[in-house]
Length: 471
Image 1 (spheres, helix red, strand yellow):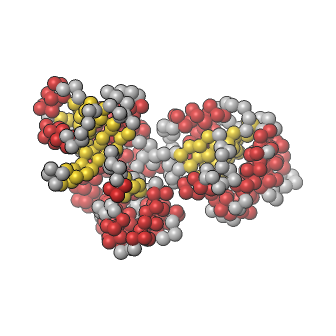
Image 2 (cartoon, one colour):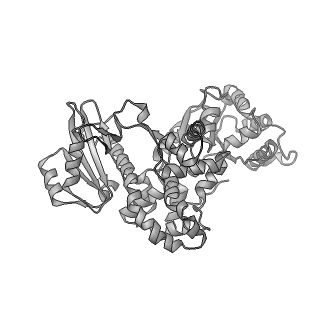
Image 3 (spheres, helix red, strand yellow):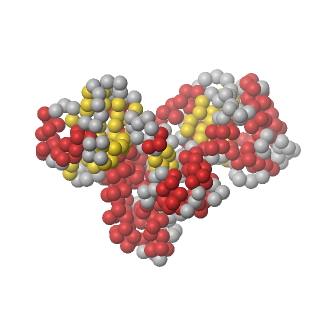
């Protein structure tokens, strides 16, 4: 039996789709996966608890096959207790599944196997066994089988991949993503908008981390206690996650540290880490598979060589930029000093890039609700050369459709002036074409009178303050 430890937020779309599938007759097979701590188990537990659905919920452990089968047997016996007089454990997974089928008959039952990769690693034949039941005896039942896993590479290759015995048999799949800035804010009703945004920026929208900060009266207390103390739950979290997922965590740790310090291309990362280019490329692919980093190409660019590697998991990004460099003082118990003298001065610079991400998420929400001047097809960041000035230029956000384009600048500042708008228009002139242009300015605070007057005169100019991005 599972119990909720924290309040449940968000995931309305996933719950609606699961419940819709549940209401349909016949056997159903669902695959749910996502990074650790993202809330996969809580999502399925919430789904099961709604309407008190009949269920068998089993969480596998990184143990041998006998241990997991015995644990699975114990849960089945707790659900159907008429076996205890003559049986202590099923002799095989087939026997356990046969028994479940015999007991539920045509009644709807959710069979939830959490951390499925642990079962499969200890028993490589389990996917083939499940395939046999999915193609055969399960089809005569109303069982809803849910396989869930945190190892994304395993779930994508060994459950959803073409070479998997289970390939093509799912009725539904979910890759459970971290919350965006908007849903992350739901954890902090009483906090100011700036602190809500920073909370997202340091947790990456991971529900478990958001809940950790939610326990404090202020953002500063949450960061100091969870990130900047040896006893804090997030102090060693990235290193622990790397050790769980990778064979050489020290090398990956060094690579992530190099990326956080501005090394964004393989040759730069190789130089910073002292690792060979070939090895670095392999490590980068593994980190991409874990969705910790990504290779980013400038918007509207057709040249793959312009790509750079960036950390996309904000908790990792914050930890490597703000926590790891201060480990010596943190180990000495100087969390107050580290926060006031190291974190606070760095936060404005750190939030600059994250605010771009938040602004992209805002525009995507507005696009979905058709609240923009047009519906865009693609959105992202742009950087490239200015041939006339012979220098590199950047535009924080470009969103485009066939006929229209948005150029946007994002400033984590209290006040944004007219010079930002003028500079954005100058950079936009680098792009030739007949598309209708719109100019968006995002500000943590507000805008000067000159910018506001310009926006009143010109409907193509849109001004968006952080406080208005939460409605």
